[in-house]
Length: 115
Length: 110
Image (cartoon, rainbow over all chains, first blue to last red):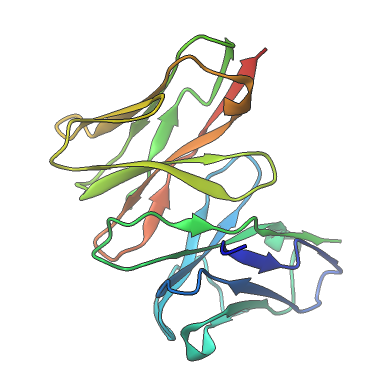
């Protein structure tokens, strides 16, 4: 399978705990994006990387959120001190950057539920 | 900020009928993309139309773009039960962020 993979698929945790999600993009893709999607809404942009550099972060990304992409390969998204409002689907996507007209390839997401 | 808005929010049709959904946006774009999302899954890219194109076809899909009205439409012809999904328009902004619309939930009844 050469698609984008995300792990875990589901995460249930208590409020206040830290969680970390992993995304493995398509190997030759230099761009990696993180999105958050709540029920009935479209994905909301959180942040993206070009290779290992984090180029842009949304205002949605509070100080409790941090993302990394060491060596420009897989990426992790960590949420510290989780809150009820963090419950959502977290989607990762990757693409080959050639000027903004390339499609994004999505993983199936990690569904986070905060108890 | 740039964000697409799809219309209608929900659409229910019989198998074999055509489905049309629309996307309106606010600021100028270089391209507009349509994606499909099946329940509980990630998004799948369907088609991309550039700002200098007016119409594009891919199989049973037809996309139009009217930059003067800042709108796009997606037509699915001869719908099938497997087309049941949510459909989103998406567009990159100048900062290379992608903004997705609110989505149209399509139900195709066998």
